[in-house]
Length: 243
Ligand SMILES: C[S@@+](CC[C@H](N)C(=O)[O-])C[C@H]1O[C@@H](n2cnc3c(N)ncnc32)[C@H](O)[C@@H]1O
Image 1 (cartoon, rainbow, N blue to C red):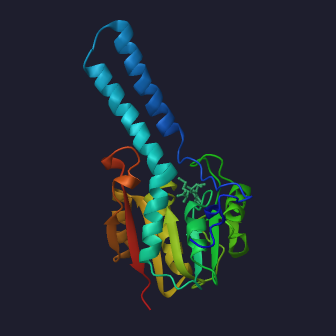
Image 2: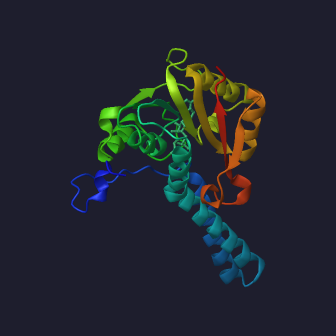
Image 3: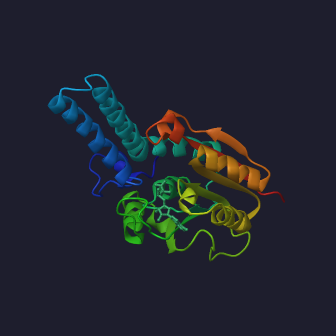
């Protein structure tokens, strides 16, 4: 986009770095895959099953890393385009992490504002308020971004404060259905009537949120947003707050 300073080959700013979601998962999968190949070579047994398992585990790890480093960014570019933002909206991103969605949204809001909320738990490598603000600066949108240390289940914002609420792979981290539904209800509370809610989460969770709300459209986000395999695919819930 025109305000992406990295479009210039002479940009003085570092590129935003959005980290890896739940990094132990691809690390363990890759290590187990390599161990399968080593075991097959050393034991001279399981000549088919061990290499097959190793290949599957390495493929899982590769697909996972592609999703977290690239695929999710492309998926959110598509979904933010679909949301038809006018550019002056007030947007809130729940569980913003290092700002992958927050920054993509802020780029579309030259006259608006994007707020992120996070508790900085260990669900993403290197997530912190400073890392997120540094990414906003690197993307040239620091003037329209702020970041709050806040729990999604008890948001420090007034009713109806936002035109759009987004959340990417964050609500499922809350340990109980009760807590997750509280976060969905909080998202709806802080939306203005007619505002849009966009939640991307594992497909079975997104279905539960839609059932809890009693409304919303579900859209699988495709292989580019699989955390390793189709069973760990991500679905978008798109709901509009009824006036
Ligand atoms: C897998 S990361 C995803 C980050 C970002 N949305 C993205 O897609 O890159 C999940 C984020 O949710 C945050 N989180 C987990 N539970 C939270 C809670 N109860 N309130 C706010 N943030 C939370 C974590 O700290 C983490 O940064």
